[in-house]
Length: 78
Image (cartoon, rainbow, N blue to C red):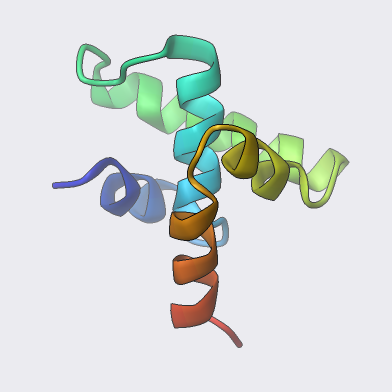
């Protein structure tokens, strides 16, 4: 299972590429983290995006995940 698939399950209303980028900003690599950390980080990302709309997009862009972010947005446009 990819990180973005897991993050989409944990925070279905957020773009998982943005959540992954935010986590990579804090942790670098993610492979050593337990599922509980992913769940907590997804919860924090919901709060972060709520307080500062668009922040996850900007983080994704800065972390090299802009294409993933845009792809997910295109696939899940309302």
